[in-house]
Length: 508
Image (cartoon, rainbow, N blue to C red):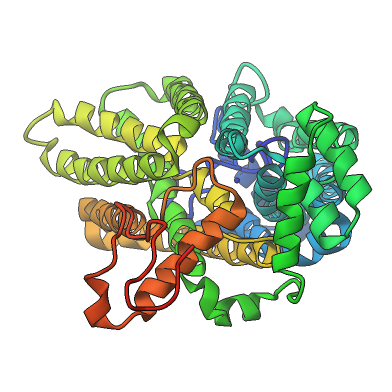
């Protein structure tokens, strides 16, 4: 979820050839091309191979090597997401982020000196390490922000990582212009720029205390949690927050931190687990990577000169920032559900619009402009809700004992789907043509329908209150059918505070 100062601008642009697009998570972790960075890197690979073995690479192996360079980022992200539970339990939230930033300094060194040492392997290793860092931060940053934020600001802070990812992408687009670092002699420096935000992260994290919830609930450090709350809230009166955390700790006193396997087998949180799986998988299966894969072609079709496309792409980066800012500023007013439902619906409608425009643009030239509008709509819809709300929901739907495992599940699915779309989309496009976007349309609309029917609004609710809402849902599902008619449900399919007549038990 860049997310903040985590994996901002960490990567390579997607190739214009039929190879996988650059992995994206949240909004984007890999800068898209300004100058022909892809061509420069491929030329470096080919020249190095020729120096070593006396002959250049054929187009097929060269494309495969570059595809590996691009895709290894997602594999590193998957590994990083699997390490989250161990890292946050042993080092805390702040500590895990600080240690993860060291990985980017190492990765930047590998990529920055790769050409001087004539080693394509260093680029690939650097990409994999950067992906590892991104996988860790995409889960730990929302977890940290969700735990330190007061409930009335949890949504705003939860979407800030998305806004900073978009800002990082835009900066990478600007730096990648031919007038700046988008030149052959500068591409190693361009790739190594990831060390700048990582260094800032490493320096600034020491100014912030550890998560108060982690200190009190997991470490039983009441004094440390109180001091941290004083710092974060800026007020000496934090007793109400301390009591709320103590209540959660008492409810979990007989339960240790659960593993991923225990989470998947725990029927008491099955709806939360399923919801996290749906929204995180839906984020990547929505086809946002596929849109970026085809964006340059769409821009060319409307008559934009190839030399001007990098500047047009910067415009889409600015749209990302504006949409992310709108999401941050409205989430505490409208709630989580409207943002994510509206975002997925907009993406679904615009994906169908791209299919229609591609089919009709030969007969109706003005349909090319419709395709551009649909691309803008997908990008804006994604960054306004689906890019960040799933990470926020993962924090809000679980109590302290289940939260790290939930982030492992959500993060792993996110990266797996990211990697899957990257490899499958070129083949899907070859076999289905313009109709391939209807697949993403279906995914987006189904995820929106699931959120509408299943996931309750969590705005201004404590973690325990959200847990009680899902407990009420489980009670509904366990009640015999003849009693269902006696139960009053609210608009989200969850019980209002009431009791079941004849059941002898009250629901929270």
